[in-house]
Amino acid sequence: MIQETETKFGLTKFAEIWNGRLAMLGFVGFATELLTGQGILHQIGLM
Picture 1 (cartoon, rainbow, N blue to C red):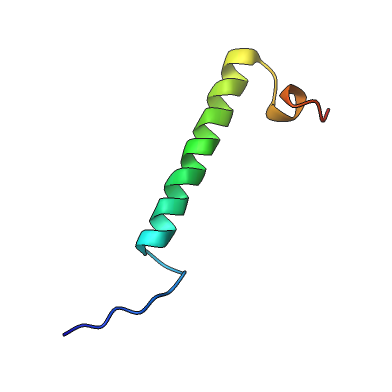
Picture 2 (picture 1 turned 120 degrees about the vertical axis):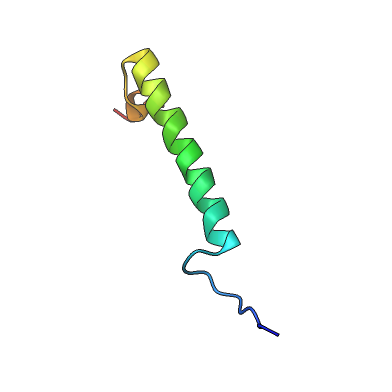
């Protein structure tokens, strides 16, 4: 029987879920910038 260890590094389910979430945020930010012509910092009033 192979015993699985709980790690936070490598190709684990935990890492893949967070990679997917961050990729979705990046895509939304990129699409928003393309549609509005302004970066995210301009949109939230930091620049």
